Image (tube, rainbow, N blue to C red):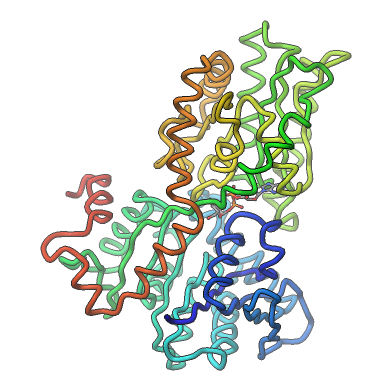
Length: 478
Ligand code: ADQ
């Protein structure tokens, strides 16, 4: 079996991955099982450029290889191109993208230097799995220095509609860089449709009968692999259930929100939706509290400090209007929490309110479902613009821009009968168990591992693969 080499922006010791959460857990499990190598940024920023990775053996039999970046790269590559161009555009916020800042050169430079530092660590039959928008150009840099291994790429964030992607001045360079991968994994069939539509109409790509696409003399396969969670940390600790009272009185229902403090997460709309609910349903005043746990994120990017100020002022205004001596409607917590604390908070909540304006998947939706008591579960309210909505149709699906719809969904959730709650939860739980983190990484790696001959044999001989057909139907093109 080939060794696995994972490349991601941040590398953490596999033993600490559970606390880092989400994808780190899935990556760490895969690496431990296959004694792999994890390569990426060390998290430190230094004055001098470093060319060689620092190697460390982890206790779990994996190898960690990391490099620092320079202060200039931190500004231009990390905060700049990755988080002030790709992140906003891919989340359909072209208005926030800083195209003119000249960040692209530093993005290419970091991708090139990381490829050069990775090459000496590679063995000929390693499978290389690159994660996320920080490293779109990594395969291109690896190929240019002679690396011929199979290289897969997984994009954790959405791929935008072609019209948004075309706005990026370097879109053709990015398309050519994407074509250097053998397999591109996206979260949803909508993302697959968007990428294929762009490649065909914006980058002269040609869809082949076997479902792959030819771009700039390279043939690449694109498919959806919805990311899953490791359920155990959320479903196991039944002993922590109900140790987190919503507020002093036991009869108070908790609505829970857990998000990084990011403008894509729809937090102001969520607060306004909750306020509208209190306005329209007076009987629930004093009986419901919204606990919003919002971990600070990328605070040196201006758009992020703006959202923080907006939320502080909104929660203050709502608490000022509706609060009473013994009741604070919004319990706004601006820090990170442990997995155990999160599991207990999810389980103590009658409603999980997950309303991003755009999200690749959204793991919080899955964590909330995993943490519920199957005999008395809470109700998930989920934005139609989270990738998770493609799988989790049994949630109450809302338009996150429509605060009246959010308000009414909160009311419906709080009034829902036990039978209906159990039925919806049973179906959602079955889906997230079948598509957990392990299933996600195995499915991606199996597909990547197929050699070209097997690959052709496994795909339909005529017409496009099922993912491509669904994606094209979605776009009205087939
Ligand atoms: P994120 O944008 O970070 O991930 P999300 O999927 O919600 O979004 O994952 C966040 C993770 O961080 C969850 O595991 C959650 O429990 C944890 N978290 C959030 N707030 C926290 C807090 N205050 N304290 C502790 N933990 C907290 C990106 C994409 C998503 C995609 C994931 C995985 O933007 O769309 O689902 O990658 O592919």
